Image (cartoon, rainbow, N blue to C red; front, side, top):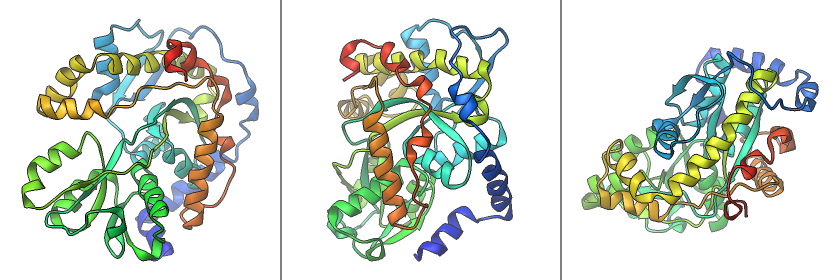
Length: 347
């Protein structure tokens, strides 16, 4: 698909998108330097609340099982939102204050003119995704992607994993057919044969193979790493001193929850994957064997470098305009996660 047509189909599906983008550009151009320079307060003012994304209830379950201390503010809503485009839309609507995503949604938000910043970083060292083929496919390696229809979400982690895999295999964008979809459409697109290949999260693959492996579907591992697992928030939220202090109080709980999950795989397998995701215990164990050890660096240099490489890769393909990603990071929060966890989870 031609790049211009691709972007039109993905970002211009309705006239409302243009209006939103225009409003967002105004928000993005607003003076945010003053707010970013203000120090965070140690105490959260009484009555403060946040609307937080907890996709599939993972964060809520971590908090409950790990028996973490009570948050010093009210979570007015735990929203089951995970996909980057959905998070951006919720940010725009004012229905979400803080979300957990990969590195690409903040880039996409910037491209759309929406001002938001990254406030916490967890580095991943092992791949979180693999490629799945449609039933009856003749695709066995990434080299076989040439000429195939590939599910591609420009604003999600799956999109950058695909682009990095193509670059590593030496395949140009015009040698494949990028089909614009969001990740929640990938499984249906595979099942129906709309696409030949789609990147799936490690925890999605077992259920897909259980249903379609006998019909010729397979998975193709990749060593491409989606480095960033992060928290981010709209600039308008961060401009509110009370909400900013609440986010600062939330970050340690977020970090400790992930450490607890990593250190208690048996409990997590049973309580999350088996009881809430309807996987077998064997499938759950397969997922946790691939799990990344949480890593909360005291400094964000590596994260910024990776984010810049990602933005540049998207710019090379004509999907976004080139820009300096350092504007996406709110350094007031930089060391908070690292200070909340044992040293082995900082390096």
